[in-house]
Image (cartoon, rainbow, N blue to C red):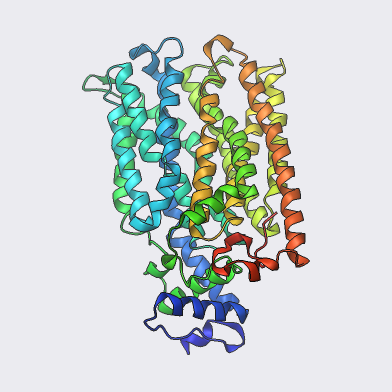
Length: 500
């Protein structure tokens, strides 16, 4: 009776047999052509179990990642710059060094994610940067800080793209963005929680290490411990999800095949093989180019906001402790905005409209920061910036992940998008310079311009996706089925539709 639960109208999944790859493809193609639909109750139960067993762990990983990456901003106003003699632009250079390995490792890391098993690989990265973060608390000079920042970037580089790719193995396309939002909301929360944590840790004076070193030491130890626990709970793929019943595992694999709409003929993600053909397809996709540039535009204000919010608030006349505490409310606003906007995006199955709306809100926020007026208005502007920029990041990543298939196309495109976007760090880390204090007009203007650029790119991609979907609906791409190998079409399959 269990198999009768799999499909509406009493359609069951075939019993598992030992098959070679060709048999797997034939079985999948037959199932796809029959247009079978999962029983809604079973589908909902699978999604609920993934939400319970995967999302909380990814939330914790991303929370710690953002805290460990941006805690240098908290340490700066608690004595780091003074103790290590970070005069001139040395602090900004230390921030920049982080992004060199971070950018270079993105695509290769996505390629090996499935090989090593994402359930081991992602927590392994967490343990690695936890060790590096802890060591940062023991540095005595500028050179030591640069070394630690370099290795921190090396360990964190494959994380974000790996998490997006990981979720795309478990969730259907119209379910994906809300799940990305459910872990990504930890980014603004880290600003709130990290500020409170740093305020407390900076009061420690022990063993010759005073104030800021304890921010790195304690937070690094917490990260290591979390990674060691997570490695025992995250499954590699739906087929390895031990918390599912056998009938649920089969259905979880099958629903991902149906959601591909012809983009893959592999019966499950483990069967897909790496090929340079998929790499070329990822690079040549219009979505990859436009949305990578779009993420570049979005991530500039996100990084500068996260790294320099304590500095911006200090410039309004508050002490270091109050500046740390005043970073909490804007970041909490960003936290709730991410959850709300990603939920709405999945409900309407649209990414571009959310991008346009959020960018518009952030633009108003930066205008408030630029205009010379009362400090309270400037502080209010930080709320609108957080509400606008933080939801835009998961939206643009989820948009590209939706429009690339199969696995290695998505792995390459997602990694490339994040690599290109993180080049913005070289701009972001030099947007707020000491010489521009206290107004920081130049930095605000740069971020404002980037958001306008994002609006243009989002509008362009919406128009392109609508046009291409119309061509496929009219049968203008059906010739590919007869002129090319259907198994190599991927997202170019006539049945595949781009998300708007």
